[in-house]
Image 1 (cartoon, rainbow, N blue to C red):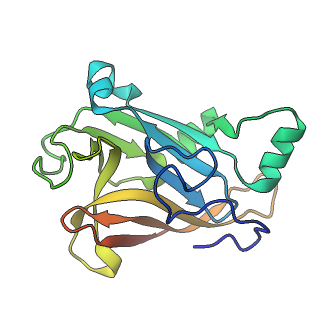
Image 2: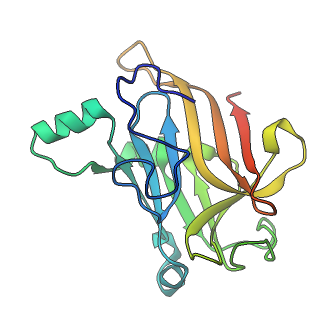
Image 3: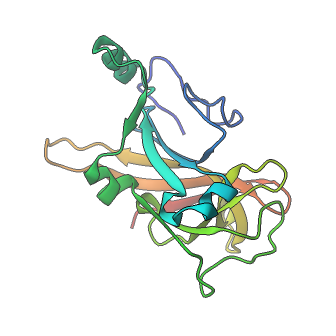
Length: 205
């Protein structure tokens, strides 16, 4: 995972939540990083109490943090002081959108997973299609996390894991009207049972 064209590194994925990049927050349940640049797609989750006191579709909000130096410099030159930017309608539909709904018994993960609450919300992400995920909360800190079954480091046995971030490796288009080609996606986090780091690579087929 690297940004080969970056003159200045401003995103540090291995640091604790709230310290990974300018504008980071402990409430970010998931972030997406891309080989294209250092701008971050952020998925911020509400607390467990606020989530179930309101409509589930409001459990998560998605937005950009445009921290890549050229983007940030352009924003400052135009008078914009914040790095935060909303996802466009097209980005919601085709790239980085998401949906939250009630858990279904046929697809939900076990209730009695270690470290996290029993209550949860089913979440689907456009960027990680066909992967069942749940929003839950860490029992000790109350922080939101995204839970999924991952196959650790090339193994065949899927285990419950916290997915902290997603890395999208892509080839940028040469034509103006062309779309980027995704080579692979890495799901990165840790096992719930023993906190061992985990990464699963999903090739674009």
